[in-house]
Amino acid sequence: MRIARLLAAAATVPLLAGCGMGPNPVSNTFSRAEAPVAAAPSDALAPAPLTVPPGMNAAPLDRPREALVPRGWTLSVFARIPNARMAAWAPDGALLVSVPDDGRVYRVSPDGRQQAPLVEGLSQPHGLTFAGDALYVAESNRVLAYDYADGRVSTPRVVVDGLPDSRSPDLRGAYGHELKSVAVGPDGAVYVSIGSTGNISVADRAATPPRASILRVPPGGGPAEPYATGVRNGTGLAVAPDGAVWTAVNGRDNVPYPYDRPYGDASGSSFGQVIDEYVTNHPAEQLAKLTPGRELGWPYCNPEPDVNPGERGSPQRFSDLPMVADAELNPGGREMDCASLAPVEQAFPAHSAPLGLAFTEGALPAPYASGALAGVHGSWNADPPVGPEVSFFPYENGALGPQQTLVGGFQDPTGARWGRPVAAVAGPDGAVYITDDDAGAVYRLAPPGR
Image (tube, rainbow, N blue to C red; front, side):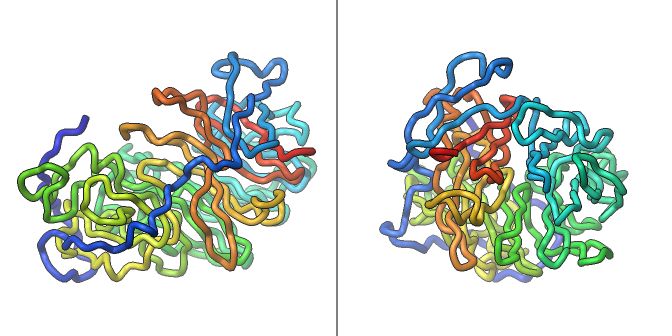
């Protein structure tokens, strides 16, 4: 358990003039009636056994496993790939899977029966995407593009180089989020996520290039420029059908209580204290639609999910979230005016750890034909722990609706887990393919008849 403690405000680099120096006022931003429960299993979900083909039953799939899936759908093991992370479909129907731990991108045949390294010797390859026949791979320090044909790659070229990682001279190995994701817009612009060095670090914002940001390389090449800032770790990165870029963000840990009032039964103000119960449920983790220059606030502003901000046990909502000033780094909004930031379109409960993000447009049957899939890795330090799952967000008119569970059941009531999804991508066969770096597997989630 964390011990409640008062944190002194850390030294910061001024960015935006705030309104004062004190704690945040307490106000009821939402009504209780507006507070849906995020990611609650739908009545449309039902337990289903995980089908494991012969030869794929290595631990932890060496015993019967069961998941929650849409009624009538099936879940099976498609491939076993240790530490499988991101995935992308190649033009020839093969599934590509990145494995940062061994520097490889694997090619899995359309039937899942054959797999082999497609690219080797890379520096922690993570994000994968295609633009036509061009494969883009995000390494820890650069983004490469290849021509892809006949199950092979050729003509490697550097899209952007010199990205920060643990080998950067100024960091001297201190980098907690160096895995990067990549997306390509309809105009050919390339977007790459640059994670923060750790939980909170103001220096990331002033670095060149800025860390905790999304960079954009213009169509045809050129210098990478910040597209969005204050993005602590935007591992989820995808382009929507309308060309908008979305990111799913891993938020900070140990957030101090930001209001000048007692928390729960405390006798005095709890402002600035790190309270285990509060930290477990705060801050929400952003799923944001990016525009040029979008500011997501880290580390000065945090998404506020409470319907009644500052109230112990408040119901929470996860759509159109306001931002609240961080009590440790931005008391009273002295470094950044959080109220001036755009509300966060959608969010995950605190410590969900969203990773892969992909859109489903037209690939799946209703009601999942238009939406976004997110791999939720689950919390490592919350009590109770947030369970891993695959989430679905319906998409309509350029906006995403609230989070729904598409696949759950990876965690039992004690918090023990048999799997942790990373990415989920819709396949050309109308099924969903899910990578799991904990179980070392790729699953196939299939609708009836597929």
